[in-house]
Image (tube, rainbow, N blue to C red):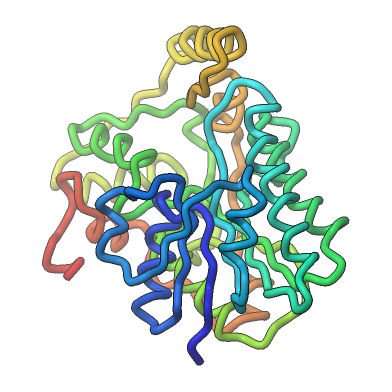
Length: 317
């Protein structure tokens, strides 16, 4: 059934993938974009563009007027202060929710959170994502919602993890934390497929669900190095990064961000996330609710991700 779907964060890595998949499935998509001239990556997506931001109530009202579903992908992962994260990850959720709550017939809402929300003590980012979830728990009275907690997401268009895979393809795997750390991962197309499955379901009960690629127990660094080595046909040596080597620039970034107001990626808080030993989750509860299961684990996903030596174009076609 064709639905009218509003998407925030449409210019981001995940948002672009979600918009493209929903449009190709025949849904009528509206994308919230900051500029009337969106990036080229959006120009081939059949969708209506609404210019505005999460800070602008009027643009949010225009975005969601008459829609069946809202998919909230917008979020910030960079910052040095709690306020920088809360401005989008908490206040943005609250502002969008209030607009939806004011509607005569509120649409359903799917909000992308993060597995980091499981450990809010680690970073401002993690705390802000958990608080964004709590906004839904405590303040959504008429809106049926679901929040998904993905782990590290990668795939075509990714600019966060791809540099790591490129470095590993040269024969060295820089490891910021313990070699025994374990973590789940998720290919971006599987995340988009889960969102579509929820849209196609008649589920209305609200809740927070983790989502991952189906690999029991997740991955560790030796496993990732072995997969990259297989794809690139070379041995990948793990290189544990000394704490001070990342700690000094992280501290400088944090100080600079607080004093000058810019939003860095690498901060002491982000390092605590990177060095956390357990980012493993499962999708059992989510799969019990919607007709979805993950299809792509890391080896196949990396084969289908352009921009690094392990890419195989014939598999991505």
